[in-house]
Every structure is written in structure tokens, then in C-alpha cells.
Length: 116
Length: 115
Image (cartoon, rainbow over all chains, first blue to last red; front, side):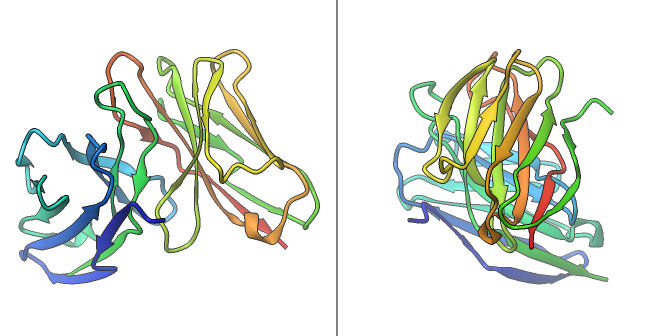
């Protein structure tokens, strides 16, 4: 049972454009939602994360939007650059409150290609 | 480099053989995780240690898999009697226990190919 559904599977964006990746979750006990970036041959690296008491978080060109009632969250990459070409994973866990598991449940990933 | 270190980077083995992978976490991190990632998928949780105690194990971790963290520092993941379905990238991650959900720092993984 996939608890975190991610879309699209792949995305092609022109340089300078906005990349948008969406995720939906089922488990309302999730209380921590990070996004990871992974380059070929490398492990995932944390990009940005959000808790459900916040509707939006911005760090540089990266923004997470969170909709608790819809159980959805999304990653927006503004002014996308060729160096952003990578696979992006959303994830969720129940560990923020300390009452649940620290394990992360990942989406299947979105392969982003930013073309010049 | 003070990141999470995994060894070996690549391992090719024949079906039925045993393999062991090593993970050295960031030195001050007391939480250590193992994940498995297959092609085109996100990482899947296998197991988690806090110091030397193995606190969680996924149902994915069959009895052919065993993980240890004997002194609360490095960890090993052993797969016995490997099967072709074990072919995957095995990722190790570590984090601090000082706060809930302190970020996980992943290593670059060990890619296992079972022939």
C-alpha cells in the first residue's frame, strides 16, 4: 500500500520556468513532510521540509505548499536551472511529535529535466 | 569528508552467496537507518537504530537480512543466501537524536547486483 503518491513521474521545464511536483498522503498521523533531491549515483539530500501547522515554507527558490484538509503538499522550484535536473522525492513520517515512527515513507520520485 | 560513508560502493554477487555492507554515520549522530532503493522507486525503510539498539524493523526485512550496530557507531547489513530480487541500492542514513525529526543525512549507497 503506497502511502505517499507523487506526480508527475517525469517533468521537463525550460530554464527560468517553474517546476511543480505534487504529493498526496493517506495517513493523517503523518506530521513531517520533507523533500529530497537525488542526483545519479548519489544518495538523497534533504532540500526543504514542512510541518502541518504551516501552510507554506520558502527557502531560496524552493517552496513547499501544504494543504492539510486535502492531504496534499507540493514543491515549487522557481527560476528552474539546468543544475536542478535531478530526481525529487517527497516523503512523510510520524516522528515529529515523538509519538510515532521516525521512518520516512517516500513517494516514487519525479525526474526533473530543465532544458536550456 | 564528514558525511555518511558506505562501503563498498558496488557489489556483484552470485545468487545464494552472503554479502555484508558497512555504514559509517556522521560521528555525532546516534540514529542510523537502512533503506533500500530499487530502480525508479523511492527509498524503502528497512530498519533503524538508536545507539546500539535496533528499535524498528520493516516487514521488508526478511529473516535473510540482519543488521547490527555493535558499539553504537558503524553498522553492518548482511544479506544471507542472496536472491535476484535483492538487487537494489542499499542506503544508509544518520541523524541526531537531539530533536524530533532532525534531518536524515544519506550516504551514497551500496549498489548490489545479484546474478
